[in-house]
Image (tube, rainbow, N blue to C red; front, side, top):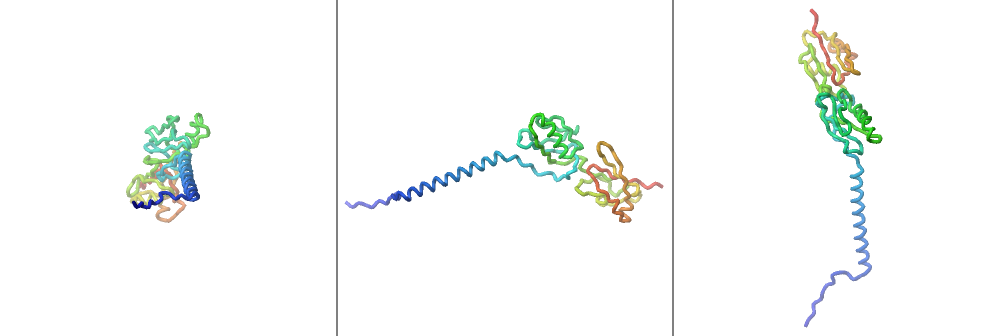
Length: 222
């Protein structure tokens, strides 16, 4: 009876077997270290801020805005909140904080002061996610072609606003125009000679605007 040859399943060479086992153990160790590093990085990294709404640094928060309040290394204290009609917001441990009229950085500092009663050295970042309040606008009223409210943008000037509304009206008293601005809780008026700016190119009159400004162009006195 003829016997068939049976191929060996494993190489019987002891040295090759040892090399195979060592390589396998090394691969498992590298995989374990990689998983451990990824897990630790995910646990230790603070939640990153969401994209901002593109508001300028001196933007003034107003009713209707939506804010994201980040409390570093305290995710349970972070929240996305609307600015209520009364101008206030509420976040975990901080209730009825006045937000209206403040810049995001000012509000963050105020929240840090309140949280300091409960958290050691809190670090807060406030991001305006949705900017819809009148504080993000500039209004042009009076004797211009199309009186309206314009979205404020960083670096906006008086000339930008006048051109955006189509220029001065037929009966505009441009040199008696003025900017109405809320500053430190008070209302101030800043004179601006629009005729000199528009018709004579006097760029000294091209004043920078701020969010919430109202440019008033009166009518000529007959």
